[in-house]
Image (cartoon, rainbow, N blue to C red; front, side):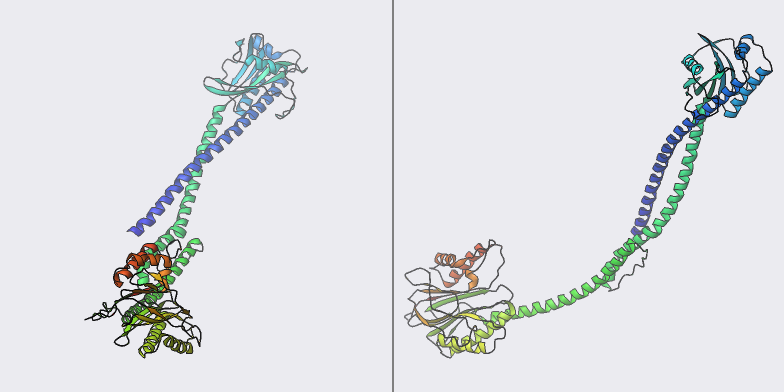
Length: 549
């Protein structure tokens, strides 16, 4: 129902708008043409009336050949003869030929005129009038006509003639009257001929023409509208409705993997839109297929990453207390990877009854490659330390093995130490790792500026330096990766070792677990909403010395 409603609504609105436009344009055209027609017809009426006046003047002048004014004589005496009848007949003919309201012959006097008249209804009336008063400005027009020069040739456009006319209303009828002189045989003006035309006829003609024009215009325009409407319906409304129907079925077509063919071929922009829609539908089906494959692949990778995370976490000691039967030391560690799996790692293990091995390391890179390299490095380091080699010798041997087959040229920073639990002596080696922080029993946490070597796997044949660190009873050692010192906030500021030492000192009298929690909380507050860019790994050991039974 909605589809049909859409089509009908668009068609109805289009038709209504076109109809309103047609009516408005017809009225405007009729008004403009009416004004132009009226002005042209009015000018034509004046020329037409003037032509009638000139012709009447010529006839009257030729009918008055004697030197005396026989027209005045006819009017004064009331006598008629053949010439009089000829004059009056000519007046009637002019009146009929030009459709005049009336035509008059005036003989002017000081305060009155005598005249002979012929009316448009062809009734003689009182043709002989002894005298009549002037009305309006008639005296002025008659006087001007008596004094005007006249070219005897019938030429209304002759510039020598003076057009003397007036427009008055008589008995509610608008009359245009032209006045021309009647000459005797000597060329003297002896009377005035006046031709009067009613403009009501003109108005009637104009209004009739306008109504006919409106009717014809409306008919032509309505026919054009109907043709235009059906053309729009065929080339626009139906294709748009069809395209709308296709758009509404796109979900189903994509679900069923069926490409929509609108079949719209109008040869214009609507066809381009339909073809674009078909291409979009085809691309969308392809995109969804591809996205489905990508999603399935991502789910597989996520599953594998989840397994890798679990495997990595399983390789790191995560049960605390780690050695519940040992009272001579306490140890705690944590690792928070920046991605699902990380390149940082830590490890601690008993080499024998009296020696504890500790490793913390940071592999170059992130993600799965770093995690694989980390596992390889961790196994090698633990293996050589468990073989009771010194930290220096273990690092050199691991470096040799890694450099033998390292196509990706990865490396790892390592802090490796062995603690003699009987004496508190740490034998350690630093392969490009962060400086540890140490707190003796009677002091505060300070950075230990230990001897540094190059990273493991960076170069073959490297010799590492080894040093000893004496821990007193109650001393603590804090180890970490660069993810702690280089944690960055939203302003690109680094957390740094100074803030780390401050955080350590706030909890330096507490257990290793609480110390790590204090540093972790300080880093979180500093970083805020900024993302974690690097793995964050920490380890803390507290040496208690031998416990007497």
